[in-house]
Amino acid sequence: MEPIFTDEYFMKKALAEAEIAFEKGEIPVGAIIVVENRVIARSHNLTEMLNDVTAHAEMQAITAAANFIGGKYLKGCTLYVTLEPCQMCAGALYWSQITKIVFGARDEQRGFMTLGTQLHPKTEVVSGIMADECAQLMKDFFKKRR
Image (cartoon, rainbow, N blue to C red; front, side, top):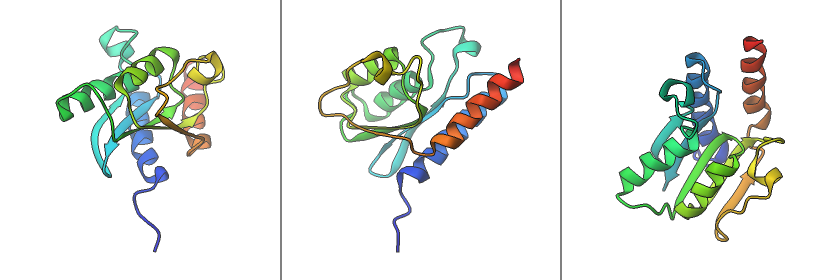
């Protein structure tokens, strides 16, 4: 029997958050943070609602997870996010010392990989999980706005 708690299982939860952002008129990026197969934070972009350029899904999730844990370090935690984190979010993830980052679609223009932003040396990165579904939601959003 295959395990239920796979990267795809948790990415679907992050994608559900991205769909909430889409419905709110926010750029549809969703994120969750998991520890020991338990979701401890869920978020989506809130930059428009909060009028705050730093209110990315990852930043919201980092804050929520740190509050849940009661500390600033996210060791033993995994971030699932629908889009490759930007340079700002990668910097915050570096300082959080998160153990693992799993993202869906690449951000070829603003992603941390493209820009060469470093993560914490012990952070594992997995990319391309449900990439097509994550990318399609972004395409649908920007098509709708034009």
